[in-house]
Length: 159
Image (tube, rainbow, N blue to C red; front, top):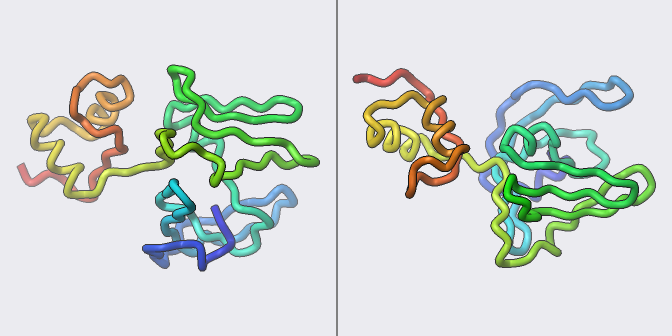
């Protein structure tokens, strides 16, 4: 999430709910876009007015099968096979991650989602397998060549 609309490319204005802050204040999610910084692109970043800092969602990291660890002065985000994707330090009560320090060869993929064309192509290639099972194939790495993306449908299959 970010409060800096000017950081977002491919911005789409779309209300998609509210964010509740620690003081119980609500702010609307007014849209989303992509943030590119140095060697990293993070897709579908929510634009929320009123944030004090750009924020990552720990829940979304966990939903993607990543492991998030917090210790007294450091935090890290790792894959299931223990590859470190992101690393941060604690300053006061806030853990910060500097994306410009991520290595060029690091395979960081945050919230990547297949395009609708890709989703339907793989749906057809896999004999009209439903999207829940396609995502399961991806998460368990059961199909060689199947891109590691989140597959979703926007309508019912005509077949």
